[in-house]
Length: 238
Image (cartoon, rainbow, N blue to C red):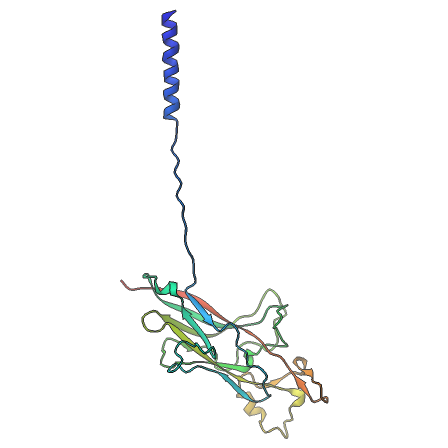
């Protein structure tokens, strides 16, 4: 009987030991990151307001007096404060696109404005910035395919944390004339001159509305998106 009791106790100790060795530890580590963009743009909206057909209008900044585009009178792209504190990166390559506004956009207007515009670098000494299209950008009519907003590459730029933290881009807009209001025989601006302007300068009547006056009183509302897209982050040289 004693041998049987000793065997039972021994088996119990073995079972307890086996359970002890089968236990696992558990540890919890909280992993987090604060994610920000490398760049940001100003302003959010650039409005030429009420314009007169066949007249030129400009939104531009003077890099000598307004090096960061704080006036909001031109398109500006800036390196973010977060990017400036990242030691592994030195520069940002980016593209500028003109793009249709999405169907249903409250500010879509009658057609795109960028075909009647030119873009230029406010600081020509920036050899790493370049305009891809010198006259007009995109099509007058909006895309009929809601899935495709038809972005068109307009320009390319580079920001560098050592010497070029802000890039300024000027826009020139030549307000088009509705074809019903243009007379090739009497208009002081010939079709040849108009062809040299951004987008040609004559807009189809389909994009024009009758104003409160007689039949020849017409107007059109034009709008487009201009997109700054980061293409590449350049790694800093060790």
